[in-house]
Amino acid sequence: MPELPEVETVRRALERALAGQMLTHVDVRRADLRFPFPDKFASRLTGRTVVSVGRRAKYLRLDLDNGEVLIVHLGMTGRFIVANGGAERGAVVGDYVYDTGRLPQHDHVVFETSGGLRVTYNDPRRFGYMLLEKAADLDAHALFRALGVEPLGNGLDAVTLAQRAVGRRADLKAFLMDQRNVAGLGNIYVCEALFRAGLSPRRRAGTLAGHAGKANARSERLARAIREVLTEAVEAGGSTLRDYRQPDGTSGAFQDRHDVYDRAGEPCRRAACTGTVRRVVQAGRPSFFCAVCQK
DNA sequence: ACTGGATCCTGCCTGC
DNA sequence: TGCAGGCAGGATCCAG
Image (tube, rainbow, N blue to C red; front, side, top):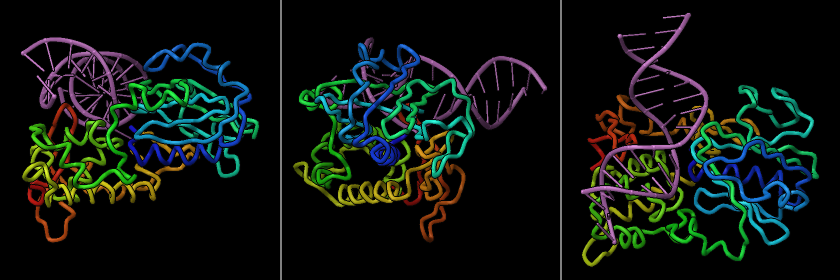
């Protein structure tokens, strides 16, 4: 799925398309995604103006002019396609390529805007979901309350990592995948950050903390690596694997800079390292790492 | 309190 | 060529 850099790329595109625009028509084509759509979903959105498009972890938040917030999680395969309202499938309209490769059977929600754009939510696996909540209630919402630090905000540093990790016996991989610790990482960027930090995904999370839960060299390296890899990935427009696309139809570029993810059997890219990238399964998910330079 | 496993769903790729 | 099985960027629930 879209991890933080992909969600941030989507956020930027939706902000360009939707901020300040009214939703003139909302077509909801099935009763549920991962969860049922909120009650009277389409009619509560129709006629509303989108004030801003934000992001928390992997959640998009569209703030509306009536104090409500449309929350969207993309799950594994959710994506938005932004097109001129008159575009047919396969058409190219200005800068927008409207879905050249795929049948429309997984277009679950279609928004039309006062600016003449059509914004389509497509999600084959339907692990994504949409919620409608009052803005004032959002921080207390179960989905947001327990989320950990935002890695590109000011909250992620070695001290925070060490405090969260102290005493934890879980693998570092599982620790970083847990959104309560660092919010927004997923399988790709956990693997890439651990590579850059020179840390094995199988190391115990508790070893990020020194005496009395203080930061140590490992938590320093990891905090820096996480921020660095996410920053670069956002600048590159995220990673395009399989069918993820930016909302304008173009691909991200960061997949070409993966050092370990999906590179099993290939040589380690660290200068002078003679190792080979290995694939192991942890908590049911593949991990990619170099056992020679990640300890 | 933590931890690992099963689970939701569809599409695509691999191997027989 | 066809088909079964495995695998996929997430997150929650549950048992131990």
